[in-house]
Image (cartoon, rainbow, N blue to C red):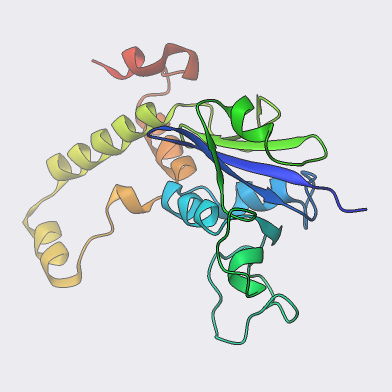
Length: 202
């Protein structure tokens, strides 16, 4: 029997979610929870996943790399969606589900007790934030990125600026949350998740 799960995200209007038929547990390497934590930490990618509608199985990618991917012959590592990959199209039976609350959405999705929610840049399972994610809020980490960018500007000299204009620069928006937090705490070790935004203000 498959371990079914619900995958839900916060939207501007409430919540939206999809049914996933297989591997709804959290454990690596095949569990939905593990894959969400590993491959779906960007809100745009999560939104693309939800937009697929109900899923047969979750892969590390939303879109296939080649055009031979199908429900019967799934490409390794690619998510399998009923509407896109079984030739059903998006119908009322396989489109994503919406509601005002998580409870509204998950109550309409059949699952075996695994309800994953993406909100404020973090995944939770059954109401508990999953391990392996930064304990700082998205707003705090965004402030850290801004601080690090300002620091780098202040520390730049003419040779650094010439290098930037010649070779380009990888900004802090392109670094993972974990890398941003680690770099920031090198400069502000006194900051704690419990202190929140206020503790980031000089």
